[in-house]
Image 1: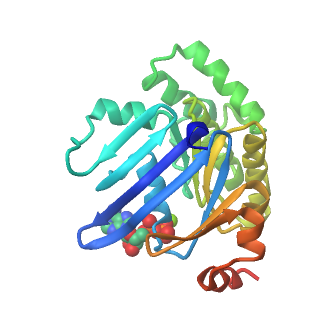
Image 2: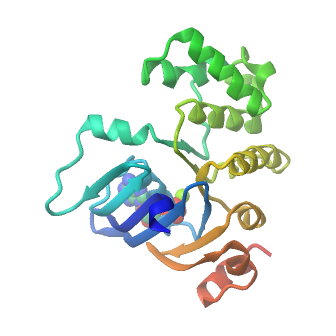
Length: 252
Ligand code: ADP
Ligand code: MG
């Protein structure tokens, strides 16, 4: 299935000083596929996502997103800023903290990247931003400022803002962890809609039921390794590894 893969991570290693965080990670996500990444705190989930959009630079290994390939380690140069920017623009990321610009309206937040990074005209960028806000159910909040929004609304703006860059893949790092429970559903609905539209996604989540329902594949990682990987229902409902069972028992 390698030829249809949208994301390919091969033997990626990443340390911070003497702390080896990713020990030998290989992950494949098919085009249009959704992978959920679960595991205990400190297992390297965020670091893997950060490596996928090169917010963190792997020490070794190879990452391919669509047609963009980056190789790291001996014999490979550090990527140039321009190459990093080109690679990152293909990868949308949504964080636990929404990171909206507080001094800009919702629509300005969504337009900002396309205008300043991609050089789009303001009218065109605004039109596109309004279409994306409509998609996440926030067309009527276009002129509001972030401090007037609920956490769920802020996170939907953050998703629209990431989509405005026209990414090939979307990464979600605990996108619902900071939300009040009653606001989680509206964000998951948007993620589910993106999955249905064929967006390739990697979701780091503690919403285990959601991970099972929306993802085809679940990866359980611990201490910088993949412990178990398989069809979502198998890994969640009938884990093969004792470590996966122990981890999942905390969610019942
Ligand atoms: P997870 O998202 O699974 O909780 P992380 O990838 O955030 O795990 O972190 C894995 C380990 O790497 C933790 O021990 C964390 O303290 C460490 N770590 C993450 N980022 C850095 C960094 N920039 N500098 C030093 N240590 C880091
Ligand atoms: Mg994390």
